[in-house]
Image (cartoon, rainbow over all chains, first blue to last red):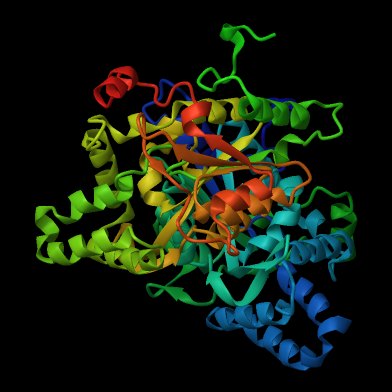
Length: 314
Length: 314
């Protein structure tokens, strides 16, 4: 019954996945529905890397660190850092130590303001190695539509990321329409430095919170004291968050599966097992909605060279 | 020129203090003013205990703990706890240890949901020892008007409290119109407990963040990555937060001074010194607005027995 002008998710192919999202929104927002959810309980949480934007071949934050840390001001430890980057991508066990170390490099007097302004500068200029465009252009258009549609349905959207809050904040409001206060993400310890009338918040070389796996649930709970009724993720790091959403009376749990090696990258949610199962198998058993990017998404990115890019890669 | 029907702060006596608040709001919200501030930068932060509601003779949270911890389920450590409460009120140095200990009592399997539901139950029933009414009736009416007026002027109000976020959240939205996500307050470490399909967040016996003094600034910065342009406090614990607000181009820093021993309690901001000065002297030197509760507030509480209570105490 919908004509294309009224299609709320034009980048999604017609089918059961799209329909499930639309059905969910309808049932929780229709006042006389048995599944109606009040507006202040309409909380949706979205993983960032790999769920809202491209995370390959290197997480944007890692690309930023690579650039920043190989810059003139911190050159002396470059080789040590390079080794750490290569080594960190392999497993999450290493990420804690890496975060600690990375922040350590920034420690030399850097304030959170300075950190964020470096992020702003980098993200305005940096070019993705494959797509040759800005990282913020590599936001998935179908997920942009989901964010917008949820907001239109009275949902409050939160980004819940293992990445650093200070890395996401400088651009998230413009790109996702999610303001500073709705970023729930990893952070380092900070301290207040006072010099006469000058006050500044400086980064310390110690992790404060790590919003990854259970840490995502704890971060949400600490911030909201509420459970999301919709959660979107793409990896093992998101499993607990999706399970947490699943404990509510109405829920939509979505796992984005990277199946499109032509337009994007092809890889599984995580090589490691969750209770002896792959994340994908676990998701299916839980009746979470798995999105097959290749077959469910008509458009991948908003920018025009989507088509020409696909041709190039044929 | 204002008639009483249009008075936006009817519980405030006419005078320089009230005028300064109104002038501030006018200058930052008038589009052609040189001091205009965009809506998303209009952030106001409010201390809770002693700034928005009564904190004597015992912080409400302490009264709650006293009741909870002397309850049947934790009786065995009652005397130890009692000693700690008496001893903690003296100085903040002890509060860290106290918090740790208090949370420790709750540790035996208590979830954050359970903690908050105990708070809800307590706050619905507990009676203040002097006023013989609910604690939430002891919110200062003049501050309620300020919260409302700021919200009407496009401000986003945050509670920034050394008290526990989980203690404030169950009632803050109803009482202050400040939702869960705008409570920036102390917290304990939590962990995710999984039993089959059951997920629960449980409190650990370790502090996670302490939003007191510098901790208030760090808590605000971690949450918002922005500085408040208006800040309200009443004690040494709020000095850094007010100084932080003061670093913005336009700011209103307000120190509530408890001068009314008839309607409320008479006490100074803190016996301890800040850079060798009393908090009050420091506030005046910084040109912060000091509110003299006795002389600046026409009404103290919204409830009716304000008058009869004053009579009783004459």
